[in-house]
Image (cartoon, rainbow, N blue to C red; front, side, top):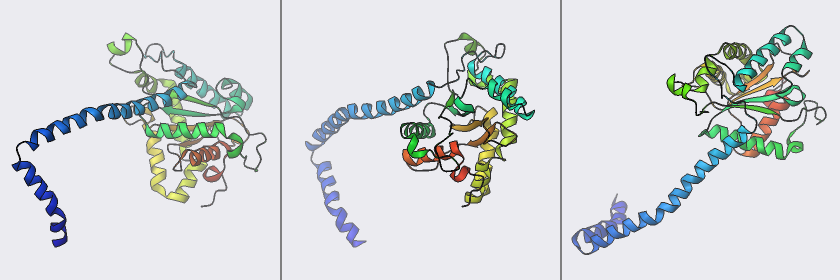
Length: 291
């Protein structure tokens, strides 16, 4: 305690001197004002950098996006609406063991019958993490990709589709109806059928089972809870990451083979490795996973 009092003594004396010395106070105030003024450009630059980074992330996902423009109660004309209609038709064909028909229906969305489906938005830290991991995976594909048998042969090329859930458009319909495109999408019959399929598939994926082995039931409950929120725009989880797979490697009843919401790892390299494991059913996505 005495040590702390001795340490504080010079600062107490300085403060007393400032209070008792009239001419110092205006100079101190002026100095503080100038310090604030000169720091404004740095603060502005920092904020602008954060904004630019967020915009860059969305631009990346927009390059492979299913637009919500036209998602309306009375039209259902958006690219996203058409996708979910196609998805449901493909799932029905898959259920009926008409694999080729299912592949034909979704052929425009993913090369070689496999693609990621992302739900993302601006100002989303997890979406930025996803974007950095994807870019690293794309740039160093041969470094990260091996198939379940340890080769790079016959591994489908990386393809993904994105739905930007906070998209807005200059359309008076949304103002008049006091709604947003995502609200109309998630209340559509096709999206609700997609949601029903996702809920049926989520606890049957290898990732769900394996994360229970590794992290316990709380992590599994979080995955189910996040999937339940797909029809609730107030708690919609971004990023939502699904793997749509119509290849022979998917031997399940559903064309959604994996659903997850976070990436393992602390940097873009480990995130790229995690996404590569999802793409090739390795690591925690493997059917023979052992912790």
